[in-house]
Image (cartoon, rainbow, N blue to C red; front, side, top):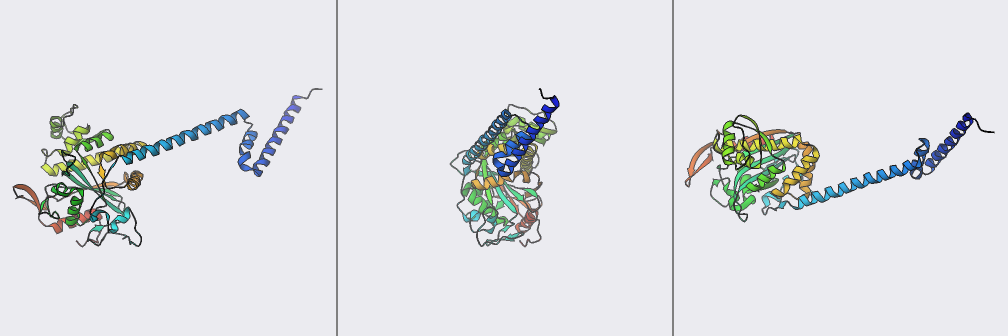
Length: 383
């Protein structure tokens, strides 16, 4: 006698319920071993599907592992290709509380706000100051003069990125030399003497520095695939005449896309608008354009561009410090950008010294105080 369809259905449901109940019992007894068995029985997934799911899971994990390994190798290769240069003088790396931002020492007190270290240099443990040199050198064996000098400050206290330009013809006391143009310090003693000159005159602690020559600058701009920036007609005409780029700009006011050669020509331009004052303003605009380029890219592309650019610079950052800085890039890109130029137009007089035109600061105490107030935004400045 044949079973009725209804009887077969009830029998199948009973067997299925028994299997599910048994799998659930095993799940309680041995969760790791029986979880998949419970899922497959409960949802009536064929056993062949389990093998497919296991294969897909293994494949995905393999891809993730390969991607992780390749990423680690890529990052290590990029970090190994950076031109590391340890500074030889103590003003940069030794005996300073300011360095607790990068390497905390035992029994070292960290100030909550702006303060002075034992050498009379102002610092804030939430503000990191990086001195950047654009070098004019034709021989890699020489130090070269600093064609551009900027202080890039990451202000975690006020959530700002501060860009300070220095007029390169500013007359300053250079340790071991007579008063000369600021940009001569790098030629005399490299980054060490330039930093010592900066700290001596402006009383601000420098955390780290980086430098690059003209070729390196072009390669850095190439790593970010060029920049978009506002130009006037005269600047466009100057770039077309002197950049050496095969690409020509329309001579008009407005936003323009610049390739690496055009960008270098633009930041070195002293012939359009206020000579070196206008040139430093253009340099700040280019830095902001690079930051905006990072802001418009996704995180992966931003990190990729940064690691491509790293081999083009020379710095006294360590690998660990670079990784720490890069990991914070998404946060820093959200910060407001503030600009400053030193000295300001009403703070200096143009004079001639040893046959050279230089900018003599009228009152260094006043100029320094104005700069410190911009940098630290604190009432605790006594100068």
